[in-house]
Image (cartoon, rainbow, N blue to C red; front, top):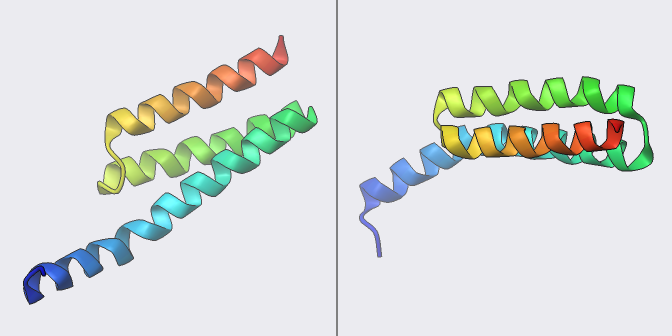
Amino acid sequence: MPSAKSARVSLRKKIRNQPLKTKAKSLISKTRNLIEQGDLEGAENMSKLAVTALDKAAQKGSLHKNNVSRRKSRLHSALNKAKN
């Protein structure tokens, strides 16, 4: 069982980080859905929002910068593949 202090700190970090992670995840999945549907213009706009959300999550420390970089790369790869 963790100490009371570490439990409080963990809860505080979760409350701060969870919305950032959730927003990034939902924008990524919306972008992927738009790519699958063939709406490339909408997907491109949504991917810009997703990249911004990912960068903010990395800046605030909720996601690691390499994790964010990998996610952005995969998202751009999927978008470029759909364009061609």
